[in-house]
Image 1 (cartoon, rainbow, N blue to C red):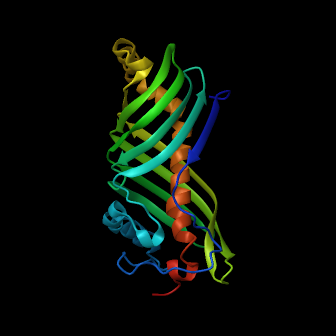
Image 2 (cartoon, rainbow, N blue to C red):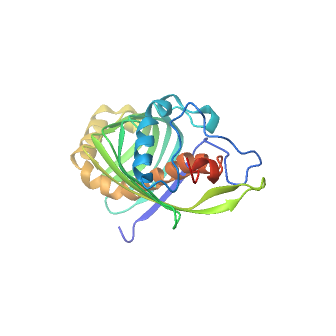
Image 3 (spheres, one colour):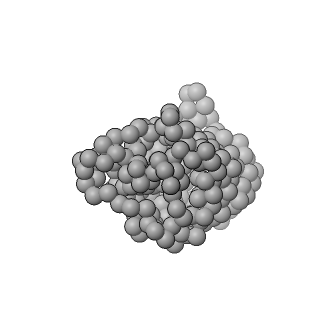
Length: 257
């Protein structure tokens, strides 16, 4: 993949929330309580809180600008890949992702002195549905068309790292601001079916879908950097910035109970 061109334009109508906002928000009282930064069991508290957040993420959290997570809608994702195995441009539109809240955190560490987070979690199954346009090549097979697609993975393991800094907002309060976020993912059992290829030519569509699924594990390795970028952007822009940018550090991680 050294010479492969990997580019992603990630466009989400999510949130306009950043550190420095003029009005501080409180952690909604109906949510599980926040964790105290000097608690010797802080990391266990974070894992427990993440687990208790599931039912609230399903419906969304309006006070924090969180949309519903079941399904989670990606309005548009543009992908471009240029490697020996994959050479295509594609746009995914109104992609509905189901299963995001069926997660288990095995690690959620907040290294307070160094202001960094380490998270590890698994999701049992993800299902995606949406519309697409694509043009290019997969292995030696051309691929072109537009229509609907369905995809799934049996299991997804994600590791996320984030570095934050303390910054004062215009209101004089201190917020956590992400300065670097990175993620890696591993999946098993990926599958995909694209309807509408080659102007709905069923013979060519069937051949192309067979090529995709016969080689799906190898193709995923080529797509992995792109998908990791998507995961990183979701985690940073939605989960981290929305919470860290709206709730002051003193309220989000109070020093004492």
